[in-house]
Length: 72
Image (cartoon, rainbow, N blue to C red; front, side, top):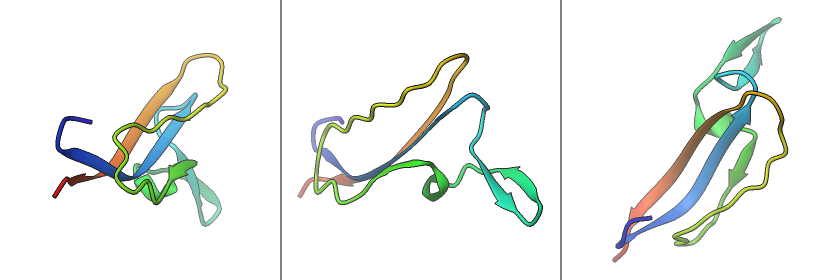
């Protein structure tokens, strides 16, 4: 994070297709909603660094999202 900013939570998608998919009725549909990503760290309480370990092979796609706050 840049100086003066911290994270409250982070969301991560890593996969072999461009977007995570969720079931909608009988179909699978793409989603870019961070709350639907498979990896989530909540209650980071002002961290400036967050790490994930993901085991995957082949072509990969990554989408990362963080809830960021300005330090008081």
